[in-house]
Amino acid sequence: MKLWQGRFDKKTDKLVEQFSSSLADDIRLYKQDIAGSIAYGKMLAGQKIIKRAEANEIIKGLKEIGKKIKAGTFKFLGSDEDIHSAIERGLTSHIGSMAGKLHTGRSRNDQVATDMRLYIKEEITGLKKLIKGMQQAIVNLAEKNIDVVMPGYTHLQVAQPVLFSHYIMAYFWMLERDKKRLNCAYNHADILILGSAALAGTTYDIDRNFLAKELGFKNISENSMDAVADRDYLVVFLNAANLIMLHLSRLCEEMVIFSSAGFGFIKIDEAFTTGSSIMPQKQNPDVAELIRGKSAKVAANYQALSGIIKGLPLTYNRDLQEDKKIVFDSLDTISASLEVMTKMLSGIKLNTTSMLEAVQKSFANATDLADYLVGKKIPFRKAHGIVGQAVKICVKKGLYLHELPLSEFKKINSVFDEKLFDAIAIKNVIAARNSLGGTSPKQVKKQISLATSLLLRDKG
Image (cartoon, rainbow, N blue to C red; front, top):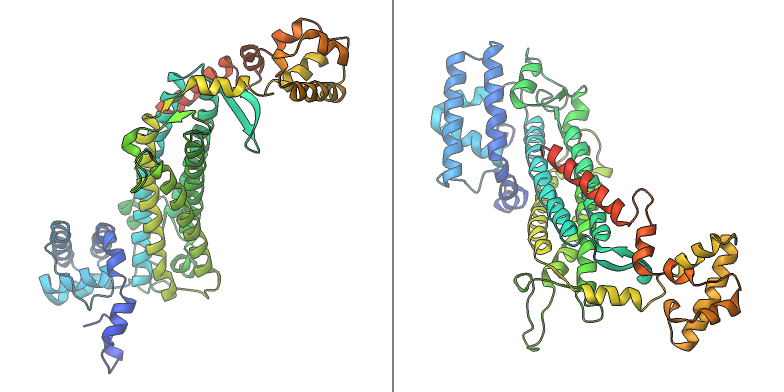
């Protein structure tokens, strides 16, 4: 029998039961649902709304149901609309009509929202640990390859030389921001809404402060209508989730590019690649490509929940049932992506020769030649034009700046002298970028040290 059957003459059509059931999705909320119900039962007894002995029986029954669900022995029925009704049905079967007292002053509207808030808080804590693990893998990779030189790019064109350690550490700081956004989402979720009932609050003398303390919520909602309708915390989470996957996708894109024959900068461990069914020689970066592809799904989930919420009148509407499928899918995708990405990163090998050669066979040191001229009291904009002429001559002669004779430089401007070659030497070019946050070895070691201290302080 449905929880709401009393007002109806007809039974729900079987097709409607199948169509509207959320049990396949919200079954993963069973722990939170039972925890919320246990806390609510304690509160009802504490406020003398039900007897202490009744609460004890209810709590004992809920714990038994929790054990059965965990063990896979709890029998779910096709008529169960959701995890809440399934547990209430199971409790009624276990202890009789006394189970019905648990719902005194409570609605599924505030019940499911409480479950989701508890769940997302736990999941955010887990995600932050996974991010921390990936950050540690990045730091390890940077420390192991601290002095390796590679081209830095803009527009995917060689721009300036950088240290690989500086390049890979960029992703550490992206992930650091991701953790901060997850903290923000956690704070949005850390609000007790239980006690709001269907939408208007309840006539019973409930103790919401007790519920907040019992369930570990820092704050209590101020408006019952807002509370049961609010899914902002899930949108905030999905925004953070979207950015996490965007960052992973960017790194995966570069791993695909840098591992290709055209670049040959890195080699992805065979355990994280696959082959071709027709081309025996192929070693494809499928894991990186899959993460890149899955990022689109999480971005779509963010838009999907925003689309669901945007036209809803206050307060609860059944549309909100779809939030769980969207959030669970995003959580599963991010968790799996972070785990596999961390292991894949830890196993990559660098082709340092190819990286250095890509810098040497380029004009990545052109800006430094302009800076050298600035040191000769030539305004930078004019120096820019002078170096542009030198690059043009090199291109025509099939040379690079460090290969062009001093005599050719002097034809462009007499201020050039032998010291220009020191100024554009790759090692000196990198060392010279010693501004805070720059790519010089000194600065990179500083940021690795800071990153390490952040990880040590991060309790996850």
